Image (tube, rainbow, N blue to C red; front, side, top):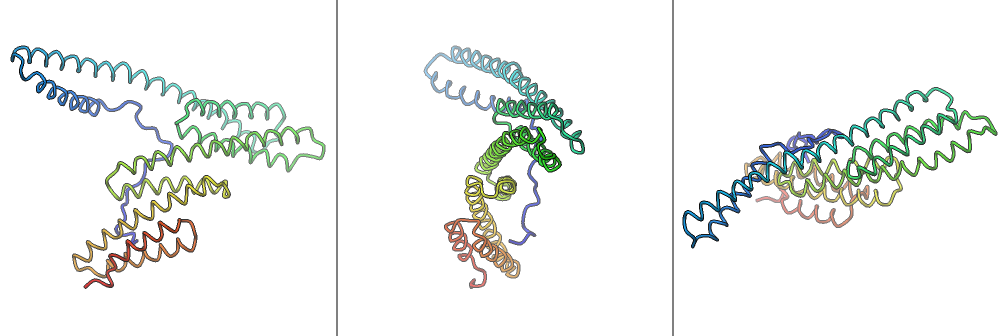
Length: 309
């Protein structure tokens, strides 16, 4: 597909935090809409009652709904938001402590007591990420901290003399952290891919769908750069790559139709040929399942501008 018609929109910065509390105007607009709908249904249900009684019931119901919505947002949701913010601040303090230890050890001999402290910090950080569960950033940072530990310990093992008491301790620590490294990477990828694909599913704009699906694919690609033979990552990437191809073909077909209708056959043929070539390259790379490739090619050939009359 020609890059000329691709959207320049970018996905949100990774790791950035969205507002913990929904903006007031969005929340109250939504609750107002729901309340109006319920008032309408209540009005219909009370159609046979006295007018004064109907008005009184509607007023009481409306005031009650307003009070409940204010209580939910200003008390319940704010309390939840504060708890989440407190948890994230605690998590950030642990991140900072572990990173500080890592930065001090990159060029120094790692002593056994230092190693023990460092390993304990990583394990505590891992537990904190598990408590937060669905916070993708927490799992990503554990993964990165584990990667730093594995790098430093590998360097320390290379410089350790034969028979050094540090060797068995480092080997055991490396085994523990390697497992955490893999687990938190998979969890981060799972959360990011799920968030991106869920958002893409409810988004009606094709350019946004492509951007979100590309973000999911990038996460899987990053995971595979660390664990290229991981079956879960490999199969997931194949599926997401197939979805992305379908979206890009649909987008390309739409642009081909528009350019063809406008008589701009040069642009239509360029998009067609670029996307057809991309499908052939994907088939050779075997990174997309054959069904998506076959359907994509058939969909593209159906709008072939070279056969237009």
